[in-house]
Image 1: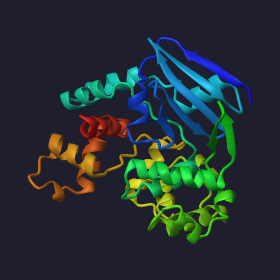
Image 2: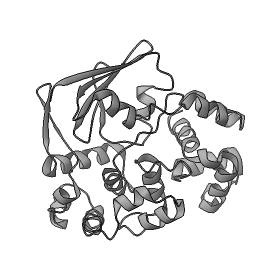
Image 3: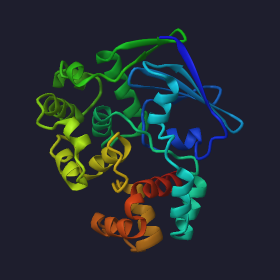
Image 4: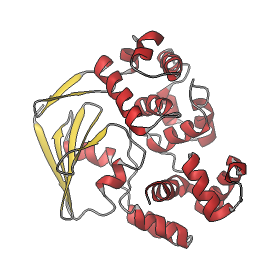
Length: 288
């Protein structure tokens, strides 16, 4: 594949750190020059900022502009979204100011499912290491700038791994879950194409929850960060519970705040923009 380049002029709502370090993705790494290089599908892309322009450079199996517009959600007006959310309250306005360059990526559904099963009770460096080892062992090699990158394995490729194989790659207790989910999807117990076509949010969520290793938080991450792109999903982890309690619930004992309470407030305050609101609040609380 030949190297291609696409420059997004006068980019708004696009900051590299905000996008790649907000917890939504695991296959992007920062380079010494401050740019980020990542692999998704059969594409290896380097993203850098030059003044107000964003420069995408790399190898793609399609036109680079089309590929980047789809993956980086470039056809959606984030300025408009931030304007709407900023009017909700001062907390939301501050969190948006902090993470003003966040965009939600359209990540492959299959890869997102496995990645977030791996993410359970795990930290980002370990998650990235596990996904890299799985890709190196079962994915396809792509050479770009004399460096090897590895695609995330397909369902068929990963189905060749035994539980023991996965354990050797450092998955810990997640090995059985990844194995079982891979085979559930391989055997079409859960059909990914049907999930992408289904309009009913609760039906998609229920189906995801039947997968091994997918609980409510992982299901909501898959709904929000994959090509499913269900913005009403509101993943709740320790940081989200903390920020929602601190700003809106104010229970002296944070551990007594339950998910139902948080979800109710999220629905009432943020409506169908709950997922992006969650990202601004989560990133602000965790980073700042």
